[in-house]
Image (cartoon, rainbow, N blue to C red; front, side, top):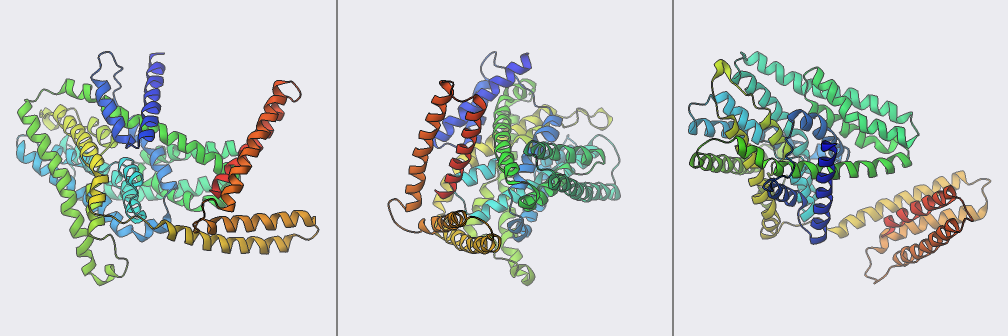
Length: 521
């Protein structure tokens, strides 16, 4: 019962804070962390200790799965070089740099565990950066690179963490063993992800019940994770591969009803999970501080050194990776990549999140030969990097984008591209109608022709400068009509003239029609 009460309280806090953040245009992840920090200082407020296994196996897989489902595979492939340079190269560079800095300041601590700490703080969060980037309207290409980076960087960091921790606890790890672990993690993850994608696609194709379809979708990331963990492969890579494959082929795998239900379901799940993990990051402050026994001056110095290193390494990597690669003709012909302002924004969008804290809590309690090391200090450093990057970079990223005058995507170009595609789609629909209309009532065929024409005209109208387009007037008036219809059905139900199931069926039909009107706005 206590656990249930705590879960309800935390969910209420997430919903309330998220509603206020949206109302006042605030960045929700940052506000939730700050609220968590404040609540951690309130005497008697429930203390929720993050379990690493819960985060890495119970929370991360569905979040990565949904992000992969929504990722454009063509855009991901187009920006693959930039994504891999950040998700693999930058993570290794940051982990090594942080490890060397910490070892230089704490020479008595073995290098291996310092490198493990570097792997902990190296990967930016899968949610924070893209949430902030979309909120402030960064160009689509920068958002794609950030999303792609966040899909894969956890895999690189977790493999490095596993190797460094293994060495730190005294297990011999030679070059062959390291190579074997990397091959197993990456290759095994791709193999498990491909197998999971094919299996899930097979099940989706043979299912027409939306409830069963969405149950399969819910189970997919967890099933893939369990299989990957069983063979010591990278669960992150496996989930991302599965999500990318299924997301790219979703229109051919599931019915329209299943896709609509799945979209609504996953939006709610990700909203609650993302909110809870950021709130829990802040709430863990009390627990982290309770175990910290290092002198304050040393803590401040190490915190500043690690935070500066984390931020500086991203800049030190970003510019050479962006511009030096263009000196290679083969690379230059594959795409222009981000410009200077884009590279700067990407460099500043390095917010860390809950995976960093969960991995820090998984640091070994003892090292080889029972060598002592300041584990509580390392956990604090990871916590400080999360809060520091979220607050410092997250709150100032909009200002940085404005100062650099980052050009947003042209909405007119997007509407024009959509209008042209809709025109081709409408032509194909009319041709299919004419080919299939034999024997159909003429008024039905005429109504379908009018519907196709309306849908095509709706997009083109958005390019015009009218105060209220015909389509907008249609949406406004039809909504008023639907509301009048609902009122009549509700009154009939209340008066006992129709049973409840008739109202539910009519309400569902009207809700579906109103949801279609949103596409015309």
